[in-house]
Image 1 (cartoon, rainbow, N blue to C red):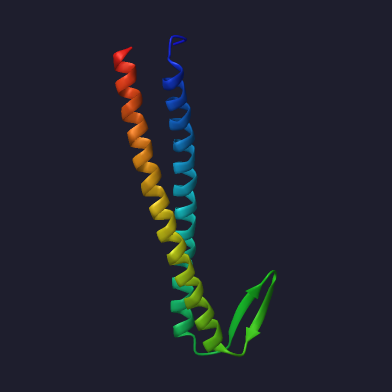
Image 2 (image 1 turned 45 degrees about the horizontal axis):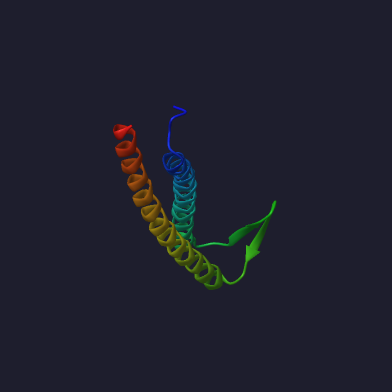
Length: 113
C-alpha cells in the first residue's frame, strides 16, 4: 500500500472528501425536505382552522390576529425551502458525478498497479 503514487494518494483524499461532502449535503437536503413537509402539513391545518389560531414563539403560544399574514408567511417559507432544496439537489448531483469520476479513476489506477 506504500507503493501508491502521490497522484493516486491525492485522488483517494479527494474521493474521501467528496464522499463526506456528499453525505453532508444529502443530510441537509433530507432535513429541509422534512421541514417543508411539516410546513405543508401545518399550512393544511391552518386552512381547516375555524377558531382561534396560535403560533409558537419559544415556549409561548401567542394568539394570531391576522390569519392571512400567517398563511402568507408560511407560503413564503415553503417557497424558500423549495429553492434551497433545489440548490442542494444541484450540489448533490455535481458531488455525485465527481464522486463517481474519482471512484472510476481510483479503480482504474489500482488495477494498473
